[in-house]
Amino acid sequence: MPRPSTDDGTPGSEIFDWWAPSGETPLDPVLVPAPRRSLERRGPDEPPTERLIFDGNSRSTVVLPYIPSAKASRTRPLRAWMLALPIDLAALLAPITWSQQYWKGTVTVALLTIGAFSIGGLYRARRHLSVLDELPSLYYRFLAATAAVAIVVAARHGSINYVDGFLRVAAISAVLILPARALSRAAVLLARRKRWVEHSAIILGGGPIAIELARLLRRYPQYGLRFAGFVDVPQTAHDKREMKPLIGEPEQLEELVRYTECDVVIIADIDCAESRLLRAVRAPGLKNTDLWMVPRLREFPGSTGSPDHIGAIPVVPLRQPTLSGPKWAIKRTTDIIFSSIALILLSPIMLVCAIGTRLEGGKGIIFRQQRIGRYGKPFDVMKFRSMRPVDDAESQTNWNIGHDPRVGPFGRFMRRTSLDELPQLWNILRGDMTVVGPRPERPYFVDRFSVDFPEYAMRHRVPVGLTGLAQVSGLRGDTPISDRARFDNYYIENWSLWLDVKVILRTVGEVFRGGGR
Image 1 (cartoon, one colour):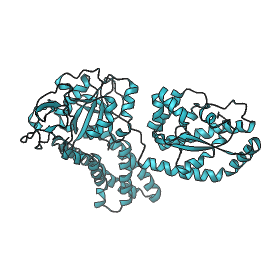
Image 2 (cartoon, one colour):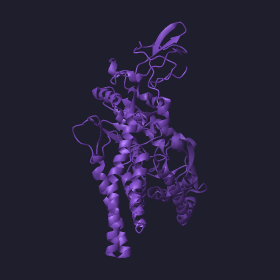
Image 3 (cartoon, one colour):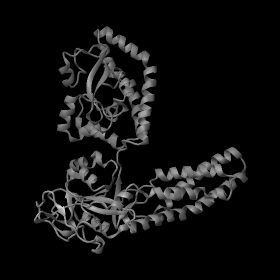
Image 4 (cartoon, one colour):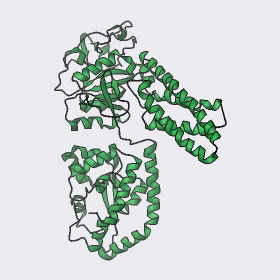
C-alpha cells in the first residue's frame, strides 16, 4: 500500500471530511489522485479526517492515524535544550570579554551553573514556556554555583579586592541570564507557532480530559505537539467527531508509537486497569518516548517548583527507566572493575570455601546451573556446591534447599553468609550478570512465575545481579514472588548509581549479620 499523503498538502491523495463505516478495509487500496489541498484550511478544532480510497471499481474509506510529514520527521531530533543550553553558556561566559583576569572562576561558575540547570530540570521539555516561572530556579542555582566558587577563590587568593572583582564579574552574568533565557524561549515559541518544529503526540485515554487535551493540541501549536490520535480501551465509545481518530488499543501502543513516529504519550483519564496500563507504557519501544500524565486529583498540587500544564490541565512527566546511555555504560565499567578487584581480594576466602566444599562433599566444587538473564537469554551461573542434587531435573525444579538434610554444616554456613555465590563474580566479569540487579532464576520458575505474576517478566529488562534491592529487603527464600517482582521493578524504574551503592552497602551488612538463606 502506498504511503498516504499527510496534511502538509502533498499532492497524491484527496482529503475528505468522511468517516468510515467499521470493517471496510480494502485490499491493496490505491489513493485517489487529487489537486493540492491542505488541512490548515479547516477549523482548528476539527480532528484529522480519514482518507477516501478506491480499490478497483469500489469506493471505501479506511481509518488511518496521523502520519508525520517529511518536515516533521526532519525536526524529530530537535529539542529545546539544544538552543537554550548554548545561549545560557554564552551568557555565563560573556563577562570574559570585559575582564580576562577572572576567566578561570567565570568558566567554573558557568560549568557548575549549566550542570545545576540540567539536574534541576531546566533543560527538560516543557509544554508551557514561561521565563517568569523559571526565574526563581534559575537564580537560585546560579547563586549557589557562584557562592561555591567564591569560597574557593577567597581561600586561594585571600584578597578581598580579588574576591570583590570576581563577584562584580559574576554580577554581569547574573544580569545576562534573564535576557538569554527569554531569547531562547521566544525562539522556541516562534518555531512552534510556525510549526517549524513539532512532535507527534498520542493521547492514551478517551474521557473528557483526554478530549479537551486533543482540542488544545489541535488549536494551539505553541505547545509543540501535533495530535496523532487516541489510544483507548474498547469499552469507551469513540462515536463523536471530537473523539476521533481512535487508532488502537493499549496493547498496540508500542507499534503505534513506531508507526506515527510518536515522541510524546499523554495518559489522561483512561478507563483501564493499572496492570494493563503499566504493560503498555513499559514496552521497550517507548524507551525514547516522553511519558506525561494528567494527575487524577488535579486540584491538589503534586510537586514543588514550576509545574507544567497544557491550557489549564496540569501534566506531570513520568520518569522512564535509564537502561542505556552514559550512566549505564558507567555501571558496566564499575562491574568490570569491581569484579576484577573482588576476585583478587577475595581469592583467599574463595580458596577456603573451595577446600571446605571439597572436604564436606567430595569432588565437584563448582556447581553450574542454567539461569535466565537479560531479555530472557539463558546462561550458566556458577556457585560453590552446598549439596549434591539427585539429578539435573531436581536442581532445576526444587525451589528451596535451605532446610534440606543433605546440606552439611559448611554448606549451610556458606548459604547463610552468601559465600556460595562468590564464583558469580566471574559471571559478572563475563557480562552475564551485574553486581546489583534482580535475582537470577531458573527457566522453569521464570516461566511459571511469569504466568502467575505478569510483572515478573518485566524484571528481565536489565541484567540479573549478584545482589539486589529485593534480597537486601528480606525477600529471599520462601517469600512472596509478587513482592520480589515489585521490588525488582521499583529498582529498575528508579535506578541510579547511588541506589547501587546503597544496595551494596546493605548487602555487606547482610553478609556480616548472616542474613542469607
